[in-house]
Length: 246
Image 1 (cartoon, rainbow, N blue to C red):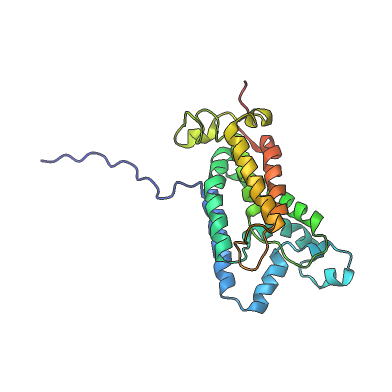
Image 2 (tube, rainbow, N blue to C red):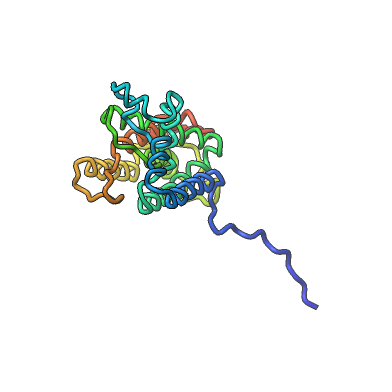
């Protein structure tokens, strides 16, 4: 007679926080729906949900022609993050969202992560607006909020016991190690190298020295930088774990 050992709980194929799965699914669903829309209807979607600097320009006639009114002036600071220019843009953002967004979501929890995503997306849009005030070209994509997640992850990922530290931890506990202060983080060579490379790439995008990855669209590097700095400096306001005492 053979004895059967109790089955161990099956591991999920993708070990992702559910909030990141939800956000990713929403981005995919919205892009899939837009693929079946005619160009006129898709333009309506953009006018309702994309961030459009022209909404805040001095031309009253143009502002009155845009849908949503004052409410859209507010919600588009966040909803633009769920729209993407093309499939390449979407895939690139999803890869980085799964990598860095998951790390931050494990640490913050779903509610804090959702607010963090919204706030940093809005700051990214605001940074873009300051340099493109009144322009008609819409801003789309989650890159500003994802850049914020990258910056937030720098505060704990390379710490001892963290997911990328010299003495790496495993499981969810690795994402809940005490964070480094900003000064401590930038004494870490890995953090410095990552940040320097990140800024160089985005500055080169801004100078037009790197080919675009999203068809004929331009990369909103200003929104990326605004999001990154927001994630870096606002991290302590969202972090439920706290900093290491060194």
